[in-house]
Amino acid sequence: MKRTDTTEIAMRIVIYRPVPGVRHSLQSKDGHPLHAAQSSDGEALAFDFAVRVGPGPRFFGDQVRAEGPIRRFVYVRVGQAAGDPASPWSRRMKIDIHDIAPELLERAEQGGIIVSTVCGTGKDGSPACATVPVLHREIVAR
Image (cartoon, rainbow, N blue to C red; front, side, top):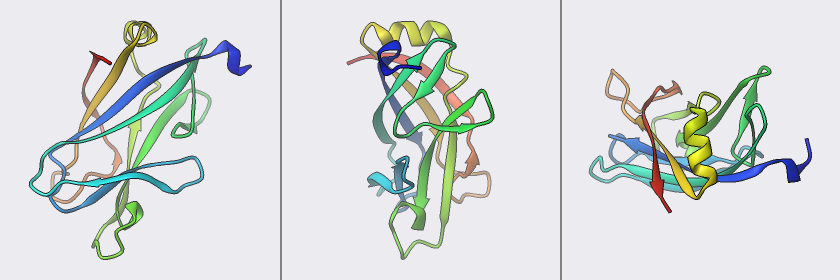
């Protein structure tokens, strides 16, 4: 697919209730952490990035990862994986994007930001990892 056949849309991952003091970052295509941030008191963290969307829909971009012919997701690195060598954790959160409703994609093409909110704390109180379900998705104005 040609790049001209895609539309760039803005996305935001909000990590609700991250474990305080644990560094988080988006993962780039080359595997390096980007935009590292940490919560001091458990306040939400937000990461903005852009993806290109083509017919299907198909997703492309520096943060987009593929698993099989349909599944697309982004990684949020946690602890050591996010560049904090002193952290007791080295994890990644996998956040699916292939299941974004077509209506949200259409609205994002008109200038909105797709915001996906996930919980940053696992059931055991440690940082969330593996596939993390999206709690809420919405469009906000740029």
